[in-house]
Length: 68
Image 1: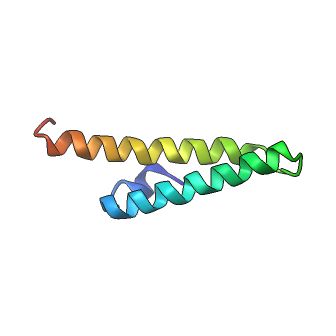
Image 2: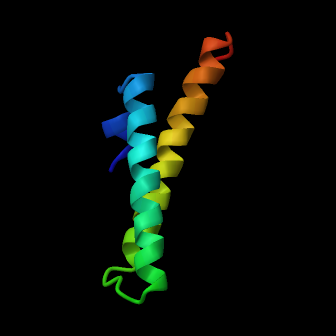
Image 3: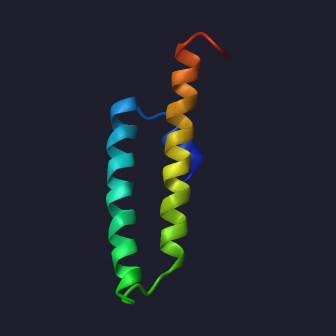
C-alpha cells in the first residue's frame, strides 16, 4: 500500500483499515510461531502499512489542532 493511496481516506476508513491490518498481523504472527508462514516479508509489509496509517491519522489530528 502506498502513502498516496491512503492520504485521502476519511478517519473512519483509516480506523477500519488499521483494525484490519492489526488482525492480519496477529494472524501472521500465529502462522510464524507455527512455522507455517511461507512469506515472511508479509509481516514487515503489514507493519509498514500500519505505520503509514498511523502517520496519516496523527498528522490529521495535529492539523486539526491548528498546527500546520
